Image (cartoon, rainbow, N blue to C red):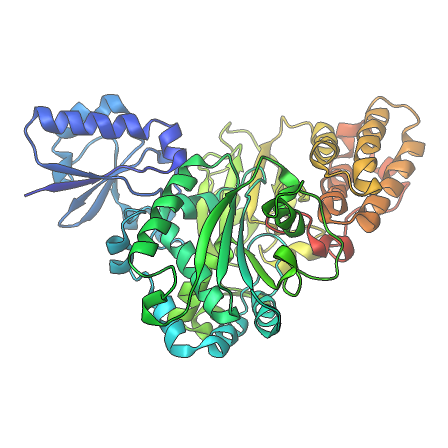
Length: 538
């Protein structure tokens, strides 16, 4: 009987030696004349135990990790193919508390299936949503997405159904569907994990969208730094074409949807949807003025539906199981589940998919185990490099769009980065301005010049050069960037700066009284420029 061993092909696991582990298991099996089939699955996102090897047993898939290539001999010696005891054994994968307590919908197959096996995808519920869409028709499909309450998982949190209906109602043709896969925020990796671990679900979501809005051409705008994702997507797209899930006659419906990958060139600003469209059209990635919005005049001036990877990948489960099922999860106007990505100084980093409304403390301490250093948590940044900083005392905030906004932050792409008590928050604030200066497309003055001046003013404050006067300058500068920037790269950069000032004034050589001098409330609202998230993907 053939034993089946799963070794992740996800780039996070590969970076920790998964390829060498797979080869070591292959060699050891051959040396012992054992019939072993190695399946390169995706990652389940439990990075503290990667590479995590699983073995199919009668009692479920037994997990072992973190496994090194040198552990292969002892694993075989302990009869791990039968799920026997070993110092690396973690138990049945689905029963590991870190995984069992999650609500996995979008990531239900990640780490379970062979990512590029269509048979595996279909056996685990794949393409059911697409078949429902063919039965429902376009109008009902758009209605289901709207009723579900799904909001964009790329950062801006805009209601997905409104986007879809706007594109569907547009009269111009042809129409396009574009997936923004330019995942450039620090501490985020959910898009990558979908593309590497379950690429067919992205194709299914985009195909559903195309049928719903009447599009015939699609593009996946993929960041060039994701070669593993590119390989998985390329193979999945080829398979979808050869089996009738893409192309001129999708599943015999007579409907056409062509799909291709376009690679970015490393520009963070191309995470903003209009800069991305410029890049796809062959021009330098620079932000466009709005209106018109892309759903009416987007790619090549035609109606274009743009969502990010997780948004598209969530649609199939909504169509398959119904809008009410999805709405039954979440909190307030933030419905469904969301993949939180825990990184930085975290003991157990990784991807946690759970209902919106979970607290930041649960993610950082219950799932993350606190800091990797063992030192106290001092600050947590939520929402990527443009997100606000939260203190340890603020960790009971609920992680949904409204609750985070009420505390002056953004949920963004679901990235959460942990810092211990050795962090210098003045340096982190300066980095936000420096990052903006480096990544600005240069089209508008507040972002292009304001970020450079912001870094200089922070230096003046830290070095005690007229700190009170420069605090006023910094506040005015942040207001100018917030309200005067064309997109949210400049519009949201003040968030980390002012939250660091408000909650950690001592790192700037200031006292709370100094900060009060320029006003008690230093937070940035998520209205105005922020709602047009420069990095709407993120």
